[in-house]
Length: 296
Image (tube, rainbow, N blue to C red):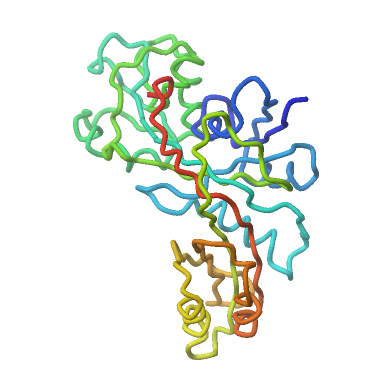
């Protein structure tokens, strides 16, 4: 029986690539979604077993849509009461390519891509004439689809190798990302730990992800929480904040730590300083910063 997985589509996106890295190809049924919010709805309704969503990029930082959806779904005053958690993660090496049916870059008049891509290929774009029009679309795969249907052969897409194969678009120039180590991290949402991939690197390092809100009128409230992590000798790997949408200038803090937050009394000790505290998940650290040939 195949595993059902929802992801931010369409096919050929980097999120689709994360699905393949996590679940493989033969034993997965894919359900591309039009938005990250749709992925949350699909896993909440249990129409799928897992959902894969982008979380952060090494160049651009937070995918704020995902952060805000975690906030809106999991805060206790919300209308949702989800049972799913963050159960795994995947890192995808992002290699952008210029795809086109044009015979030369000089013939291109329009380039399509996802809005986040432009800053990731800014050095390449400096080599492109200013007269070339840059158009935002919903995904890099959608950009490739549009260009594949262009009869003029004067347009190009900045997209993935996967999209090149999917839409039969030649690669005019490959690996045009400014930073060769450009990587996006994806979260896998589900109710159970996913089956390990055949090429998973076994490790025992765990990561816990939590979010909390504080009394924003209480001086030192954030320090009171953070000092507890130091007392328990816990390493924090990241801390981010987003507007809590509860009161003006109140924020929700997203914290990731190395280890299992459920060990010991840490949660009990920091809850007293928080208005809300939600454990988003504890999962194995993934070291799959992959550079698989089929994705280059």
